[in-house]
Length: 197
Image (tube, rainbow, N blue to C red; front, side, top):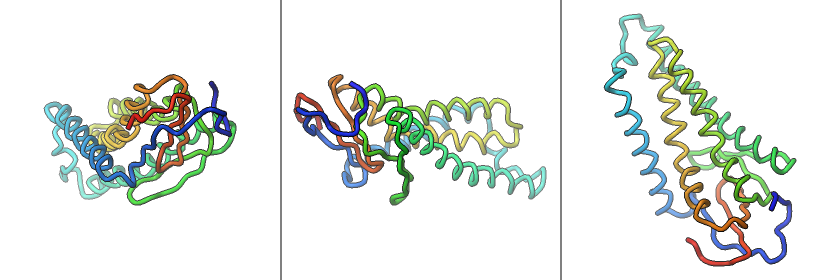
């Protein structure tokens, strides 16, 4: 099945993933994000001292610049992350995605129903694309800016905890599922209606 604008006959909603209204799931995803961030820090600390981020020996301007890169880079990253989701929503449907902000996160959404394969690409594309870009930057960026870029990479991977959770759920579902992602919640439909939540 391909993405479609209207739900095909015979499909029923089998469950909804709503991080903003399910406090238990919201907590689970955020704890997962924190664990990922801690592991990523622990992985690099033996090789790259975080002290270089706070080193003022090269002057106050360089010190301020390192933190400016983190702040500005994080804002730009959040926008680019959602634009990648939006690009793939449009690639599969032919219609523009919509964007917004809610509480502490940005989102991209669509009114279309996406098949399993298409939706997995939509969900994972930002973390993969920006993960590769940021990995290359971490290798080639000047030593003084390694941690500035790596913090954005940590945000990329840990911030994708929700996308990774959704991917995990989708992989366990039948091939015929269709997903409608409003940006703040996902509704999953199938011909074989059964509670998976």
